[in-house]
Image (cartoon, rainbow, N blue to C red; front, side):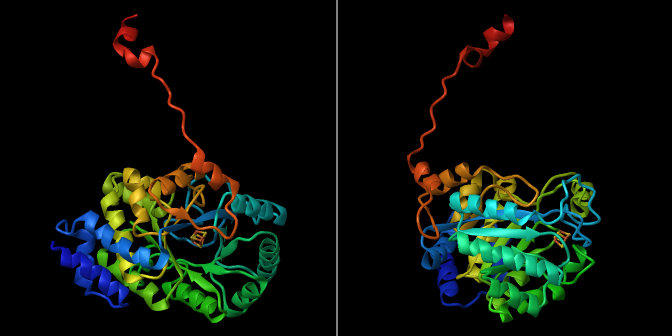
Amino acid sequence: MTSSFYHDLTTISLQDEIHSDTTYERILSDSKIELLPLLNAAYQIRKTYHNNTVQLHILNNAQNGNCPEDCFYCVQAKTATTDIDTYSLKPESEILAEAEKAYLSGAYRYCIVMSGRGPSSKRVRQMSNIIKTVKERFPIEVCLSVGLIDESSAHALKEAGLDRLNHNLNTSESHYPNICTTHTYQDRMDTLQAAQTAGLACCSGVIVGMGENADDLIRVAKELRQLEVDSIPVNFFLPIEGTQLSDIQLLEQNGSSELTPDYCLRVLCLFRFLNPRAEIRVAAGREHHLRGMEVMSLYPANSMFIDGYLNAEGTTASRTLQMIQDAGFTIETNGEIPDILQDQQTKQNSVLLKELPLLRPRMESNN
Ligand code: SF4
C-alpha cells in the first residue's frame, strides 16, 4: 500500500469527511494494509485532538448481578450461570470511599456502574445525592451507567452534577437481536437521546467479538459519529464461562478467539478514523486480547481503565501507569498530580539474580 493511502486516511478524517465502507472493511481485514503505518495514520488524528495525553478511568461496580435482562455477553444477566458475587446498591459511604481512592489513584473519571434494566425514581434520587457529594468532595469527573433512563431522570442527574452518562450501543442495530432479547437497540438509542436532551455528555461504545461482521462495526462506528458522542469505550469480548455468548462460542469455535492483537488494533484505528474528536477508550479485554501489543493501543486510543473491569480483573494500576509513561504519553489529571503518579516517575524495579536451580536446572534434577 502506498504512503498516500495512509496519508489520506488521516487527512480525510481531520477534514471531518469519511471514506467508503469498502476502505473501512479493508482496514479490518486486508493484510496489504500494514499495521504500523495504519497506527501512525490514526495517531496523527489522536495527537491533533488529544496530544499525547491519556485519561484514566476507574470503575465502581456499585450494584452487581440479579439483572432481569438477558444480554448474552454479561455475567450479571438473568440467563448467565457464572458464579459471581451479587449485591444490591452499595451504601453511600462505600461509594464515597471508593471515589476518594479513584481520585488518589490518578483517575480522571470515576465511573459508577449499576446492573439492571434501569433505575426507579427512588434510585435516581439516591444516585443524585451520591453524585452531588462526590462532586463536592473530589475534583474528579463522574460518569454513571444505570441502564435505560428517560428524560426526566436524565435531567435530575444532570442537576445533581453528573458529568457523563454511559450507555453502550454495543453492536449494530441489525446484530442487536443476536446479543439480547429483553430490550432493543432503539431502547438504547432513546436513552442516549434523553441524556443529550438533558445536556449530559454521552459515553457509548461497543463490544467487539460477539459474532458481528465488519459491516456491523462500521455501522455502529458511524452511528456514534452521527450522535457525536463524547466518549467511545471499545471493549473486546471476554469469554467468561456461563454467559450465553461465551458458551455458544466455546461450542462453535473450540474455545479459540477470532480476536487477534492485530485485529483489535485495526478496530481501534477504525473507530479513530470515524470519530476523530471522540475520547476513544481501549476498554475491557485489553490485556486478554492485545497481549504483548497492549501498548500499541495508545496510538489510536487516548483513554483506558485502571484496576480492572466490572467483574473481570485487569492488570494493576501501577503496571498500566508504567506502560503509559514508558511509551512517552502523559496522564491527564483534574488538577494536582496525585502522589502515585509522581512516585511512578522515579520507581525502578530491582533486578532479581538467578539462583542455582535456574542457572543449572539439569544438575539440580540429577541430585
Ligand atoms: S449488560 Fe447491564 S442490562 Fe445487560 S444483563 Fe448486564 S447488567 Fe443487565
